[in-house]
Amino acid sequence: MKKTLALILSLMLMLAAAACGGSGSSSGGSSSSGDVKTGVEAIDVIGEDGIDWNHMSMEELYEMAKEEGGVVKIYATTTDANTAKKKIARDYPDVQWEFVQCDTDEVKGMIERDYDANKIYADVLLVKDSSGEIYNDLVLYDIVKVYYPAAICEHISPDLLEYGMPLYSTFNPWFYNTRDFPDGVPIESWWDIVKGYNVDTKSYKDANGNDTQYWHIYTKGIKAPSYAALWAQLIVDSDALKEQYKAQYGEDLVITYNDKLQNNNFKNFPEDNAGVELFWRFSQMKTYELSDGDAVVTAVNESVNGPTLGLCSASKLDNREMGMDIAWVTGLSPYTAQDAAAYVYVVSGCDNPAGARLYINYLLGGEDGQSGCYQTFDKLGHWSVRDDVVYEKSGITYEEVGLRAPNFEKIFEYYSSVGSYWDLWSSWRQ
Image 1 (tube, rainbow, N blue to C red):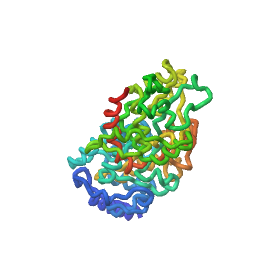
Image 2 (cartoon, rainbow, N blue to C red):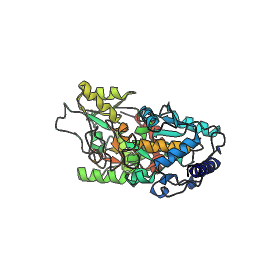
Image 3 (cartoon, rainbow, N blue to C red):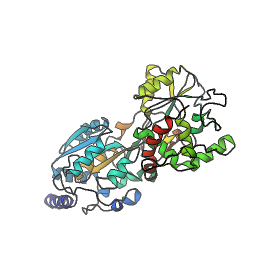
Image 4 (cartoon, helix red, strand yellow):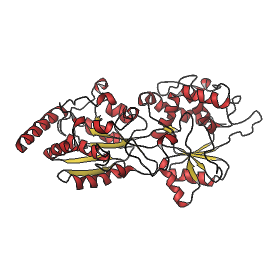
């Protein structure tokens, strides 16, 4: 029986190698994006290697990983993946595991260069994809594959599976000062952030030249992927923003930016869009862009010039432990922020496709949520994507925060234009 199982596994590995290739047989170049399926409809798709990866158990994957015999290399932008590597090495000792720490801004280029050079080093990629760059540039061209373990996907909302296999949810919130606003979140919607905008002067000056801007704004770089993607998502959701304005203020939104458009091959915004109007108004505010999130929340804590808001990573709330009077802005309408989830992928053409999938299963806790190390990622600013596992470190539910699953196809239409228009419009501030 054992010999028969070994023979079957060997044949399956040969098929996998023939179809996917190892480090020396990757096809190179880009495949047609129309061939790649993602989301729930991909769960029952058999791999091009003829293997039904999505319905294999962790033990079946372990047996195949042992047959592969290589070192499973994990490219990840979080050291939590290294913690997971140490745990899986203990539980699955007959496979070798290697963690490679990668910078978020560089790992996509690393994967692309390996693919173009026909030399595949990584087996697993773990990275946040706030902007859809991984999906649009790597997934759709089959440079990385989305692996959907069916038993786990039963516990994840379909909208979170649309563009990849999410590991956990997080976001980039606004922060406010709890000393100045002890009764809770001081704003109701995104429109409150641009309070003081004058539709006649199209600025934060009234007819007499007096300053009318209410909030003092500190933020990480607006052109950084996570923040540019957030603004792009707001542009996608123009109708919802327009409806929120009408519901909140009892009047229709006045569009003031149309004559400010300078569309060309490098930047292109639509006319009469509530999200673009919000972005235009924000671009005319006096803002302070800082390179470090700790500096942003420090500015919010000090609030030396008056009411202050700051935009940066959710994890910076840990500065409360040092006595800072800060809190997340949550519960905004139509939503607080985009879900900036971390995703995990199998690298196409890798040497250890079974080992890579075993590791991904392990990260996500296996079929029952407990057969692995899913709790490793329970941290401040993280939420479980599984409905059968609850993360508790954030102290607030995903629903209470008010996050929106991303629309990467639409975000990608406006993502690069956000940075270009930010440079242009912010230079016109009065």
